[in-house]
Amino acid sequence: MTAGLASLGMYDHGPQQAANDRLWAELARILRARGVAGVPDRLERRRSVQDLWHAPDLLFGQICGYPLVSDPSLSLRVLGVPVYDAPGCSEGQHRSFLITRQEEASTIADYRGRVAAINDRHSNTGTNLFRALIADLAGGEPFFSEVRETGAHRQSISAIVMGEADIAAIDAVTYAAVLRAEPELATTLRILGTTTDSATPPFVTSRNTSIETVAALRMALADIVADPGLAETRTTLFLRDIVPGSPERYAPLRTLERNAAAAGYPDLR
Image 1 (cartoon, rainbow, N blue to C red):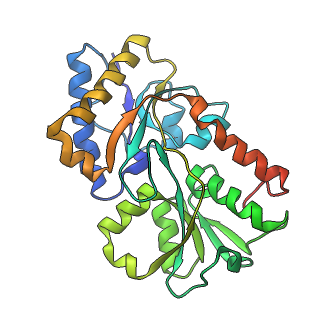
Image 2: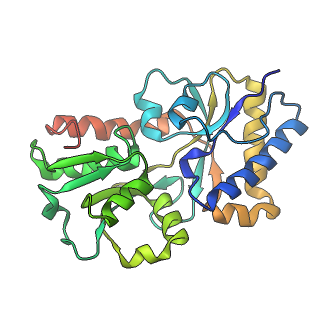
Image 3: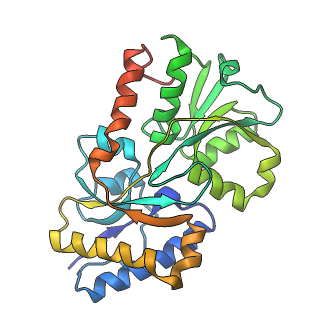
């Protein structure tokens, strides 16, 4: 049998890569011990996460909650919702931090006419939550002089540091990982405020995955959060628990989108 695909690309910054590899090695061992065939030896990092989300042979992955409920071309089953132990996170919830440089203006309203950075226009934390917040200030008009798409939260942070952008919405887990790896950034960056909370990116599998394998995946996730031998790995990933979930948990993200459109602000601009 051809091996399936596995990815943990949502939170795979710097030192997290080795932790994700360790986590996957244990998940793969458990799955094989339970008779699951086609378990890949390693995580897929060559293909984009968007490509992997559409792969019919995706065995295990993690997806941003916004495309999960807004992209009808996706066919995924939710396996569980991670609980992260980082500032700005709670039980299966997280938010974005609005960041700028230390010397910049201190209220979000002051950034009208400035340059915003986003990681991706289909990102929940980088765009959807950001748009919902700015919609209340924009009055149906363009708020920023430019919105630059950087391709990644870390690149948005770089754009702020380099003065190429003035404000960005950065996922709380990513921000914690970046500051832990690069603590000197704490003297350069400042948090202006936070977005509303939303459900954390869920672990998923393709709808083509058999029910028996889905059950094995869920049991394997329960095993890794209970394994004391993985405590350091979980700490590196800020992963405290994994709780049950379904696509309905992410429906409020579409409500934020619709409310912004109703306010005359369908796009972050």
